[in-house]
Length: 231
Picture 1 (cartoon, rainbow, N blue to C red):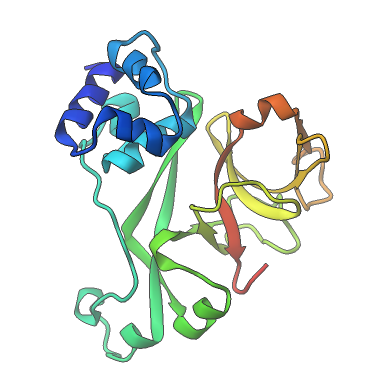
Picture 2: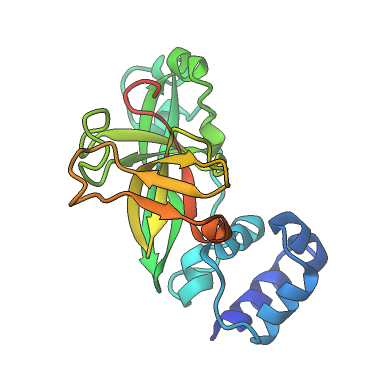
């Protein structure tokens, strides 16, 4: 089964009409027609992820055919303590729980999903102060030393995956050639992007300049809003 067949199958199983899907993901209905007919063999990562999210399907299945088509949607506000098998029954009211963010390379891009089997508990009062919305946040371990000294390798980061519009001097989780990276973005006056590591080790973590007409190719998964506190 190829990409066009999987897309047609997912659309048929969905309540969304083709024109409504196009409107939601910001493309023309004719673009979706080309994807369905196979005139365009591959999807940009951003379009693939948006389609998967709107249709409620597994993005890896859409991209490669691996795994199951369906993907459960997870809205985490308060989870029953019995589900967590914990002794302190007050923790469900004093904490919010967010799932792990899983990112996997696929054909030079990256697909991601949340994993409710691995959750982290965060103090509810602290979460409110930093405007952490558990319905569109996930946690992720820092993959390397690129953002030291503020973010250490292995630190637990909170990522808002609805916040993908680049803002100057904010830290984002990116995918470059399918590889996960955490970098600080600067938006230049000419609308180009400067993607930088905080580390002074520029040999290992070189800065990258992205021209304005290439910005749409930068795959931003979400903004890092906290690392054991707000940043």
